[in-house]
Image 1 (spheres, chains in turn yellow, green):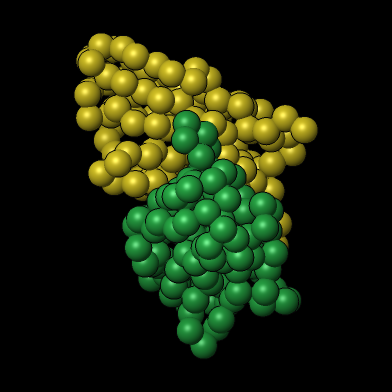
Image 2: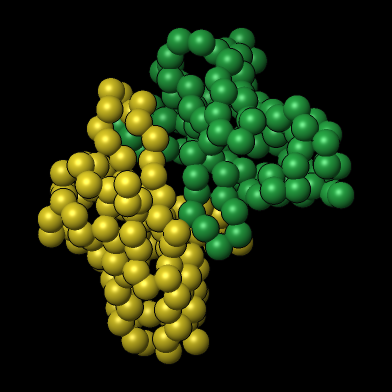
Length: 116
Length: 115
């Protein structure tokens, strides 16, 4: 079975540029999560969707960050304009609804983002 | 509010020795607990989970964890460490704020295995 697929795996760009990260969740999963991981702050939940609807975006750091899920098989996380402090590894994860949160999240391999 | 505490950000063991990674949680509802492993340059991979039923849970790669309600703990163990176990390990608890499937992660424990 295909897991969560993220692209690109690596992205290097200059400050001020727009960055778009992409995620394809596991087929049939109705929850999708975006995380950011850094040495300083660890693993942070940015936003998550249920049935393509954003449920909680309280972790999105600033208005420069936006996320969309136009359909059940695709989501994007966009940073515009990008800044050096946005450099991190960004993970996408998906899960089934299950019962009361008993289903695990399945993670992609991440996008390593470097803003110069 | 619920939380997860992982004692020891770095743990070092010798190959063949017991692995013990500690996790304590707080939750206002019966907890669902998870352990994940992260190898370099990879995403988090589920090792095992506890939701209901048997309190001793077996996972992949020879790991197991025991849910102890009285101690609010969910420690991860492996009888004999292998070099390939070197990775970062994360404990997580289900969010109890009504948001299903959202997890609260600990800060992680980096496991080193010495030859």
